[in-house]
Image 1 (cartoon, helix red, strand yellow):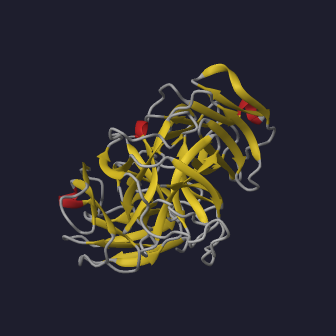
Image 2 (cartoon, one colour):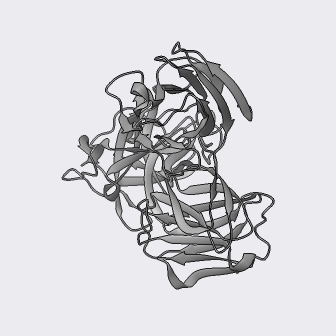
Length: 454
C-alpha cells in the first residue's frame, strides 16, 4: 500500500480495494456514520472475509463480522465514534487470528475478536453507507505517543515477539504480562534509562535487576531506533532491530504465559512509538525454517516400501475440546516448562493437521502457513503404538502413522522434534522433506526428526 492514500466513498456500500503489505493499517475517516472495512484474500468481496463496521446503527455501535453472515462475531457500544465534520483516526490489525480495531493514539482496541481459523489478508476495502459518504486518509503502520507519565498503555500479543521503533531522548519502558494491567508476574524492559546511559531487564518490579547493560546514547529524540523483543519458554531476548544482535538476555526459571504488552515513558521523556503488532512479519505468512519443498524421496535400504497404507494398531482419534485429555491418551513429548504434550490434530484451511495438545492452554496447536494456530476443538490420539523412529528428509519408514492430510490431499504423518528444551509433536510432510512443529507462534521445519510408527 502507498504511504498515504486519499479515498472518497459514496453512500453505496461498495468497497474500494487496495493491497496491504503488513498486518495493520492506520487511517483517518470523516463520515457521519458507517465506516466499513473489509479484509480479504483478493481485491473483491469473496469469502473468507472479515468486515469491521465502525459507527454503525446511527453511529452508536461497532461490530466485527466474518463472511458477511450474522450473528456478528462481536459488537461494542461506540456512541459518537465518527463525526461528519472532522477526521477521526483509527487503526485495524489482524494477526494470528486476532482482528482488532482501536482509536488513533490508543493501544487497547475498542473491539477485538479471535478467529479460530484465520486466513491470510492481502487486501483491504473501504466503503460507507446507510446515509453516509466518507473521506479517508489511509496509511500503513500504527504510530502513537506516550506522555511523560509512568503509566503503561496495554495491547494484546498473539505471538512470541514484538517489533517496535522508538523516538525519544531516553526511558522507553515496556512490560509483558498475562493481563492488560500491571500485575505480577511481569517482565519489564527499560531501554535508555538513567538519562540514556543504561538498559535493564526487571522481573515483578523488584530489584536487583536481572540484567543491566551500559547503553550510552542508545536513544535519540530526533530519530527512530528499532528493536525486537522475543520471549519463548521463559527466555527473554532484546535485539537490535536492524542488525538482530542480542543486547540483553535472561531466562526465567518459572515462566508464565504472556498475553499483553505495555509501553510508557517517564522521568522527563516523551516518546513516539511505531509498533509492528504481534510479530516481525505481521500479517504475512512467515517462511518456515526449512528447505524449500523437494522432490519425493526414493526410499533407502531398510525402508523397502515407504508408506504402504494404513498402519496396524495405530490407535484412535477421539474428539475433545478446551484442553481436555481423553482417558488413555499418553504423553508423546513435553513443553520446555516440563508440561506433557499429547498428539492432537485439527482442521485448518481444508486440511487435517497433526500437532500438539497443551492442556494448560486449553487448546491444541497445529502448524500451517508459517504460523502456529490454536484450536479449541481438536482430536487426541488414544491407544496404539508409542514407537518413535528417527529419520530424516522424505524417508518415511514402513508403518508410519498417517495422522491427516494437507489441503491438497497429501498424507501427513505424526512426527516430533527436540527444540529449545522441548519435545514437540507436529506434522511430517513427505513432499517437503521435513517435520513441521508449531512453536512460539511460528511454524518451524526440521529435516531431522522422529516419526510415529505403529
